[in-house]
Length: 560
DNA sequence: CCTCTGAGCC
Image (cartoon, rainbow, N blue to C red):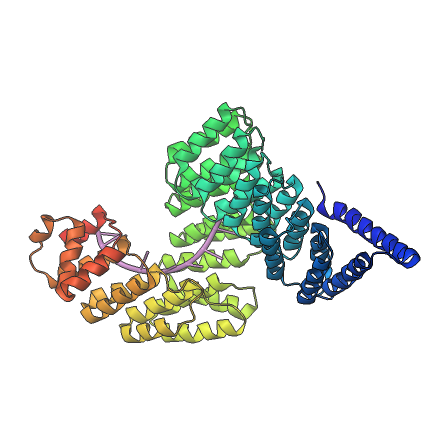
């Protein structure tokens, strides 16, 4: 039963031939009016179904009961088939038909299941399609590989990973393995959604069943681990796969180089670079870019420039991406002469500045404290008609806020929206911070309520921005408002929130030595008691505090 | 598979 529709076409054909045959017989011999009636009812029922009148079609099917042994499962299948071809299909009606068949007969056959399944799939009702497939199994039929494979592809297209995993699970019950592109897509999607364990599970199950996927199958897992600061776990997986005979490609090595650089494990990162070269796998521009990026973030500009040199000597052409990264750090460090030189090089190579170049220059200058230059740069970008994005605007908001012009930033955000760019949380948080820095904390809270936050609402940074300002001002009623709001939104504290609170306690509490005797969790609980009734304090602490702590917070206590 | 933007301490 590889193709439900194909079989069905044959089934319908037989049905019509039989109908024609019987009609002739009745006309010639005038026997058995019941049979004649049945054939008429079949036609009527099918016409109703084809015109989306499922109620009438079922009613007609019911009339067939006058004929012994009717309606048959074929009549029901015909109803389902015709209804699915009609204009206005309500799939829940079909589920009702199916449930009715199961309870009162005739029992669904393979064709019933295939027709229903294909219908559900065609109309994108994936949950019901899976339901039908599961029902098929319990009724003793085996869903075909191609049906389930189609279902998996559709689930992936629809973006529901949970459904996709259920379909995969179901497929594995029959020892069906998804095709390479499908399983790779599933693994990639899972990784992107942060479901690394699930992605690894999919990969390992396929591997254990002897289905081979190459480096492109597991590279997304290596990358996801490295992006989640789990480089050593990635390395373990990497070595395990190598032992199993997998041949890693540039992308696999680059993931590790990226991960170790990101975690500032420079020895490991450079070791990976050496390893890949020894394995005859030449690093590409992306490999170099990852190291250079994190070297720059770490302030190691000399090492970054050294690597840029090495990459050129190895015959790997630097692209605008890597130049932008270096430019940013040069601006950050105020190395004006080198900025000029690099800009010349970029120009000679025929690259023209893009969004990222402008962001690198302005953002770097801002961080380097040259706010005036950063401001002029972006004003020129805006007036020249260069393309801009939200990040560029956000840097500009930050610049205005640093100049104590946060109200202008707010005004400018409106003009950004007028050209069709939606502010993100960074935009809102930057402006909130600007207001707080100008001691306009009440206005900030008002904006907090007025902003049209994206689907996820204000995030931890938003809350910490207000919390920090409230703590600095020793404004306990404001702190309380923020904390209630955090609890209401289900946003948990992090180390920055607690650092802000500890600062507040330091201002309002004279005997610091008491703090030494107790752990940070207890400190928080005691602190709450300063401005909250005990019961409230307990309930909020237990729901919002996730128990993080660090020596850095303690530094605040000792030195604050 | 690589580049730009937001919160606390030092």
